[in-house]
Length: 212
View 1: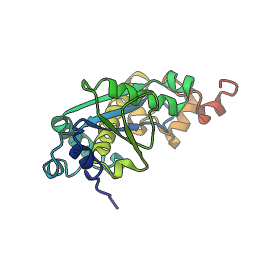
View 2 (view 1 turned 135 degrees about the vertical axis):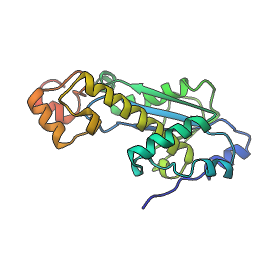
View 3 (view 1 turned 60 degrees about the vertical axis):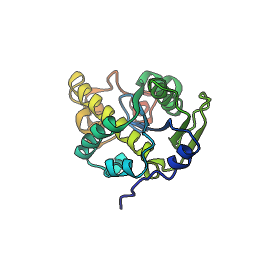
């Protein structure tokens, strides 16, 4: 069942005069390889008009790859501002995945080109930012702004992993996007890790004991 996000969280903020509301979400947090991506999206306070313009946008995990690409283009055209931030596999290994996810989100906010007045974030809190924020479990299923961010984060990361597949052939990055599939396990057994692997993650530690 696909849950359609709406603007019930954004609308009270807009009515309170906060027009720069940014939705944030990440992609790649559970992958074994590649960076974690985060997107920030500020939608214009357009109410029902906005819902009519983005009717197919929802949690990116509930969309096909083609749907995500198609709606990502529309989101970028409609948004008042948007940005994608990254944290590298080295930063993930050095800091841990949650701090690195926060770092990617903070970088996305910093690259927006405007100062948000409120943040709607899927499941993560950003204590380093003083901007007021609302943190939501399954926020990408509830807020259109967060859902839009989830689509942009996922499509940006998928595109990068396709590029990394050419740089590090044999792992299947273009297919599994760095996640833990049987093919990925076999490639690690055959080839060992590459510089894009997260050496602190359990599947890599098992293969290279003593690394972390």
